[in-house]
Image 1 (spheres, rainbow, N blue to C red):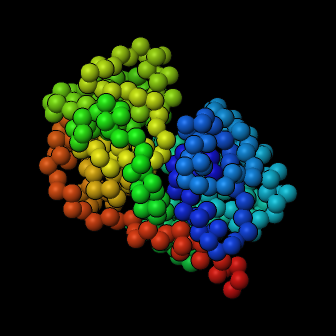
Image 2: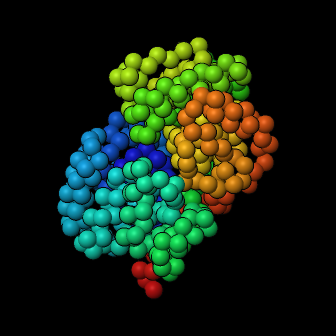
Amino acid sequence: MLGTRPEIIKMSPIVRELDKRGVNYFSLHTGQHYSYIMDRVFFEQLGLPDAKYNLNVGSGTHAEETGRMLIGIEKVLLEERPDVVLVEGDTNSVLAGALAASKLPVKVGHVEAGLRSYDRTVPEELNRVLTDHISDYLFAPTEVAKRNLLAEGISEDRIFVTGNTIVDAVRQNLELAKDRRASSELQLPEDRYFLVTLHRQENVDNVGRLKDLIKGLELLSEKFGKIVVYPIHPRTRKRLQEFNITINGERLKVIDPLDYLSFLKLESQADLILADSGGVQEEACILQVPCVTLRDNTERPETIDVGANALAGTKPENVVEKASMMLTRERSWLNPFGDGRASERIIKIICDSRTG
């Protein structure tokens, strides 16, 4: 089951593994991300078959999105009667898929289970916790994630440490990304730019936090004499207009959203990545590019533990301080997310359990 750009990326190795093994499966897309550049292009670039079902739910409040998904998903599952539903991550699509399946009942496998920020004010945290507690297979990416699940009383026989499929995806797709748009085509000085992603509700829907972050990015560019490249999320563009926030175009180069392979290439060539995205924190760590997380907490503490990432919050002075620190780091940390065989382990576990 898919719904957003990160889910498509992280589930792509699982789809490839299912095809490799000749397993009978189908994809259901909720349509939570629905524009071409945020959705359709990923299927094309990654060579994935079209989803058999697309609910086209679009955007809305959390209740509206989740409610429409529940109704649509239940109808599909009643028609198809699958043995297992796989969901990935922490979006409304994940919660709706897991909830609809568990009530039928259909077995649920949660890919990337056990991540915790311990901030219940963030919708994604609620989605993670609820999904984990109604899932039958919890595919934890790390031992840290497994300990989080055990601490909440989840039975150990439901938990499997597999590594994270993002490692599989980065390794499988980095070679393809080499042929994508180069920094010169975006009029960027080679190896002289920082890359930023900024889209999370708690940041961009809060005028004070958003103003602070833009100011911090501009100060960072000024201090180091490097352009900050910002492929802007549609949600953020809308909020900038609503809040009447202006951007210094000489410091912060705002561009349209990029396809996955082009963005992956920009990540791999950046001097520093600043992000409020969990997936980007992981990708930066895997690619050996220092990262600064523009949040007060992270559900990826492993990236901090190995020295690949630092929490900055949103205050301008903190953003500059943490970025300065990360730029001095040796890019020699160990990748904590596995060996790139997570998808293989996940499908083997499910297949073995269904035949055992």
